[in-house]
Image (cartoon, rainbow, N blue to C red; front, side, top):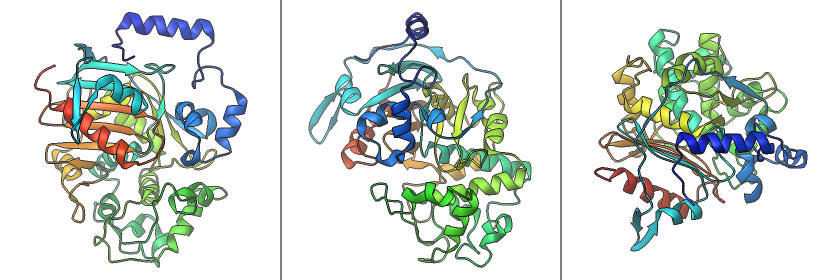
Length: 398
């Protein structure tokens, strides 16, 4: 059943975890057979049962690096009852309870005007559960790119990739710019088919298994061009790994260090997060896989909604960069710069299997969702989710 989580309920739940040993979550005891099974199979191809638990265990099944919070910021609460809420899709009505259950929602948080109005966690998850957000990492990285350019460590968004990654000077990426990477429009061939084990995205761990990011660079340096830079939209996780490498080389810091110092502190995250590495002590998988709490994802959305203002209320990222993230890319009206667009007033960060940070600027609404869908990008799941968040956001007053 959906439940509104006030501090008393949360304390009771936390006490239950501590006294019983806790469920199969990252901070509690975990069945080693389950961990072995998860480690031995790519997350794209886990069973639905394993995925439900495995998405909360990233730091136990993969090498990761901690993203440390400096200080937290408590959300003010005005909790509301959504039990009577319903939305319509293709002539059919769906209740709030039905959506949470049928869409395999592990966690839902709704903010309106910076205040927490609803929080839900499916058993056995809770407020401190860290969940793999998959490609939500890309949208967080967009903020880091802006902060790094603003600091002068990267010259320009129109600097060619090969300036920072000279390995690509004679490849199809020679003239591709950072802007092209952020618009997913490099013009280089890449297969992002999550259901095909032979696609480029499914083989990422294979490319990085022995040589880390250098193995991926070698593979991508051999890819052919499908068109000139900026001419074709083609969603490409591998290129965001390259973008992360550019940030690390330009700053001399790991992405987790940058995220800790420049972003996690600014959003007021209360808990550490963990970023998956391409190898033990390797580089972060920039295009994927930060395990963070539901609250941290909601606060990231609120940070963007509030024009990148930190806990002290100071805007730390330029309005021009935020507008760049929201502006449609030349080849796709529904995509900006590592953020998806939903009309003119909303953007969202999305990860496969149902991860979402939805930001409606006109309604001052942020919706964070953690899910464990049976399919990575099922049209049915996507249409239901989109209808749900739009209906929530369109409510005049809670």
